[in-house]
Length: 60
Figure 1 (cartoon, rainbow, N blue to C red):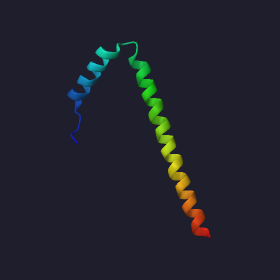
Figure 2: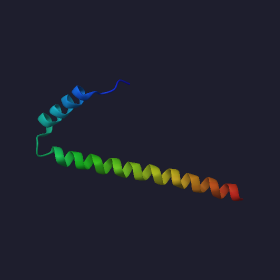
Figure 3: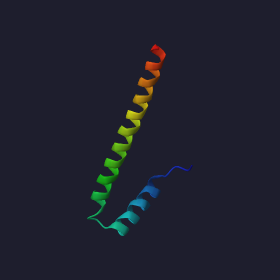
């Protein structure tokens, strides 16, 4: 998978600015941040539950 460099990132941001407009970009960024945070918390909770389940099986 190729890396996205600075020029590619700038191009993506310019296209997003044109498509969504300057008023919507902060809202979209905020929503993406909240989505990523929720995903991270959910995966952390799932792995924590799996670890606790393995520990409880090991004690029996």
